[in-house]
Amino acid sequence: MLKADMHTHTLRSDSSNSAVDTIQSALRNGIDILSFVDHDTIPNIAREMQLSKEYKITIISGIECEWMDYETGNAAHILGYRIKDYSYIKKLCDSVIEQRNENTINQIKILQKSGYDISVEEVTQSTEEPCLYTQNILYVLWKKGMIRELFGEFNQKIFKKGGIAYKTIEYPKTEQIVEAIVKGGGFAVLAHPGQQNNFYLIEDLVKAGLSGVELIHPSNNVKHRELIKKYADKYHLFMTGGSDCHGILSKSGGNIGDYYIEVNQVEDLFTIS
Image (cartoon, rainbow, N blue to C red; front, side, top):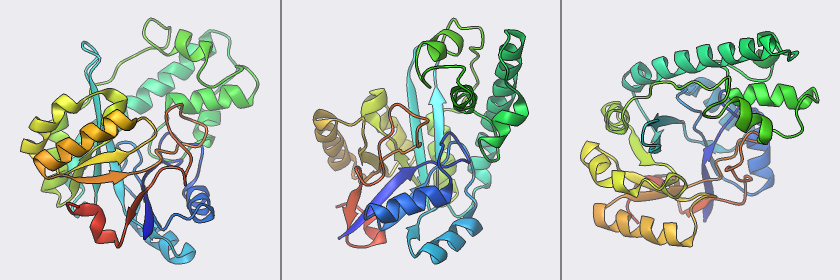
């Protein structure tokens, strides 16, 4: 059996790990198939193909797109795999990336005015294109010894609702995301439904073209997995899984090698078991 971690992140979004770091960790921990699903970021397929050959590991290109309703608190993440034409999803993601980058730069300016020794250049050095994240700010502050922990009191006080650097951005609807992935010839998967308790979205997402749901994930407990299997059976969805590893830049992500899905071959990842 092959072990597949279909949910990892790199420096191209909110992770402290480079693509090479992630691959090396996967190889050390017996992972045969890997997918980078950086947030709202079109994958560098040429680079992934090069790394796949160099390190002799199968890499499946992917993306993770977000939705958040700030009034209700409802949220969802949609994974897209094996997309042939990224132009449709790119139209939706470009706005998110632009808003997020502007928001993060503004957060840095707010911190500067509040007396924190931090610059856009420093934060930029902690990540790769296409944009900056709040997590990158926290990482720089932590490395410089200005905060004790990445996701502690400072994060809650400054960046969460009511904080001086809190600001929302506008996300596309989940149905739009699924439709764009499908229109581009890809497979749309609902990520970690246990984390955001958004099982109620599945029926409408199936109508929009959803074809999979993430079963294995650090935040999906036993009850969540039982429910996911029922939904998968009811709506004929395939099931994927992964660690959602962000290095040290996430409280909810797991370690590569601890969360994976077993398959006989790559194609089994995208078929009903």
